[in-house]
Image (cartoon, rainbow, N blue to C red; front, top):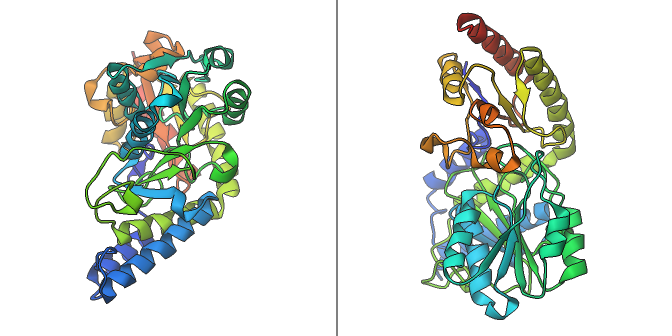
Amino acid sequence: MSIYFDNSATTKPLPEVARLVYETLSSEEEYGNPGSLHRLGVMAEKKLNDDTDRIAKCLSCKRDELFFTSCGSESVNTSILGYIRQNPRAGKKIISTKTEHKASLESFARLEKEGCEICYIPVDIHGQPDLAALEAAIDDQTALLSFTHVNNETGAILPLEKIVQIRNKKNRNTKIHLDCVQSLGKLPISLSRMGVDMASFSGHKIHALKGFGLLYIKSGVRVQPLIIGGGQQRGMRSGTQSPYLVSAFAMALEEATKNLPENLERMTSLRDEFAAKLEELGVTIISPKDALPYVLNVSFPSFQSETMLHCLEEKEIYVSTVSACSSKSKAVSYVLSEMGVKLELARNAVRFSFCRMNTKEEMDQTIAAISEIYEKYKV
């Protein structure tokens, strides 16, 4: 049996999600377009609305504040580009960090070419943004703060409450976009109480399906559509909605949030034990101690990242070196570089990313495999 520790890149769909999709696609009556006026279309629209209500309940927001996209990147792009372009009088300044996902960084780069000022505040060795620098940077021209809730490479958790407090103190008109792709289903998310104006999510990171993203836009916040056409989703995102993708996401989200605190506690215990055993082997832990327990970034002495990845792959243990979006560049992680991680550690960095279904036995087997690899390739 293989061991899969690359859940930050993607997750395996739940068996019940796979059954739901098969049954829906095999149905004689569940293939209608939600925009059609005939019976099949009306049925599809009702199903879509019911599932949207389920999602809204899990996220503590209104149905009309949710929009379906094709992926987390589209949701991020729409939030950042759409808000700035729709609200030119809000200001031309955006504040973020250089440890964000490429979907955010590339959006900032595009807006910079359009005349925006992008202010990147530094992060510390634990991946935390410099809050004093943030407070100093916010002014009356600051339109948007955009941050990642949980870093996909290190698991560092954003001090969101403090950031919201600083925003409220300096400029309440400044909006906040939160990339929740890695935190969804792992940390409590209550959109109505978090103080954010836009949030981005992805289906395939919570055991739903690839090809599905979710975008939250708080009531009253104006965002320019990224995709235009038939005017679906109240004009915010054109294109025929896929009821079965929404159903799959609703099911996966309910399952992920059902026992969230218990899962978080259990995974924290497993991560801590796994990290301690790695340290006994001389491995350096890069992730901060208070990181999300589903992500553990470590550095292997004497083994460059890709070498260890393939050594583990030979034993059918699947991990990652950097973000899946950047993995083929073979460059040292820009996230670790921005954190100030030493080059010799960053070159050897490997990310283990877990899901709630992973077990202690899998982690113990991985420790044994790493011990064998060191024994075989002693330097």
